[in-house]
Image (cartoon, rainbow, N blue to C red; front, top):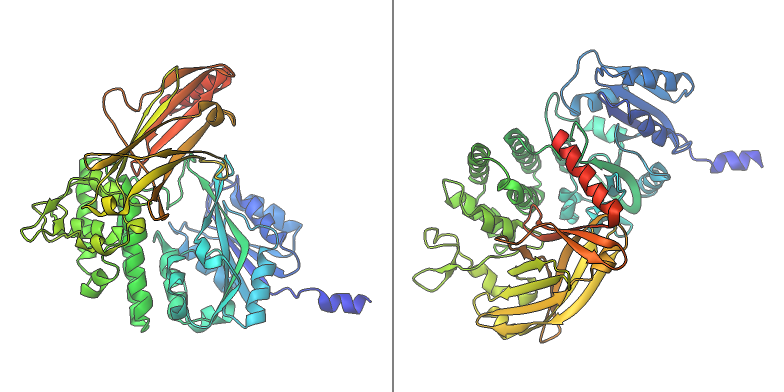
Length: 538
């Protein structure tokens, strides 16, 4: 009986490389989450990148009682994540390897799910779902969820181009021999976004890849941390310089390996994801940042060729890129932010060239919006303005949908479904449907906001989402542009029969969408006051 049990027990085949620097508060949790994966984990290699906060001592004490844990102390800080990962990879003796950052964790069963997929399909790489967990709220957002909806085997990366969009190195199990045979390593030294280049090197080697729908990595997002992660620390233009350089190298790696289709997808991903994300925030930066960012972006986009621009020419990222490339100076930032929003919004009015073709503006006739005219209405960017007016007799939401070149009038917008979605609990929503009334090239709607329902969960933030319904039954989800001006986006104290008072703060997000902070009752008021005091002291 014991012999049978031993045969069924998984062999220890996996190494988990954990890297950390000055992260004593979290590194042992990360290591323990790797050790807790069970007997499939042969070794955990913890690489301390010359910490000064006692992290290495904590790891040594843990290793004294855990024979599977090996601690490596680097003598000098590398300035990045690539070098310590390479150090750990060199020390690995197991057939398979994973990577884990010191402030994240592996959920239970992660290694087993990936190892079963890799060995069962004879795959060089197994990849699973990563979730971004916002702390302290605990809200989880899946990363690249479309890739991991089902179990799948991809014999060659070119058969699943969307793989290029998952640039994380940590939600994957790699055959150690595969990495060593192809000389696949991380960029050394201070090289932010090193995983973008590493992932490109992996795909360039054309591995057989197994995909699993299991949660295999929890990426902790701490926006209030004193030291932000690289992906969150975007206030300096050097972050953008590093990102564009990583994307450039990823493209060159894929193209140099003959993976032309994947290289094209990598460039398209830069336009649709990276460019749009930073454009949404550009208006928040100072003039010096904006000028430097604009110059860097134009230089990067100048490397794109006609085929890169020809792919899906109506995609919002391409339109944003064309405006940046066509203008030597930063311009139209509010309108570009609207176009970079998710879902994209367009802000009228627009100009027309001599031949009647709609263009971005009269002085940029080369940036044509004509590709939009061939798209179905239900996938067009729609321009919707939103105005929220908190009042004692009932908070009112006013919406206005703009016409786009006569397309909407023919489609016949009839109603709008208004949804307030709780930011920390995406499943919580308050919905109401109201009719759209046409008026001189626009459609308008007005509805009350159920503050009692929004206040019920306590202090929280609600994002406005809309769904426009057309005459033929087709619908389109959009976000609304938050109108600004006198008397708008101001905090108000609204009387409440249940809570006594509800503090209501409408505001515009980084992408310009309308959102609403709600703080009910005395506790809510105190919570807001404490938050303001902390920000002032900080």
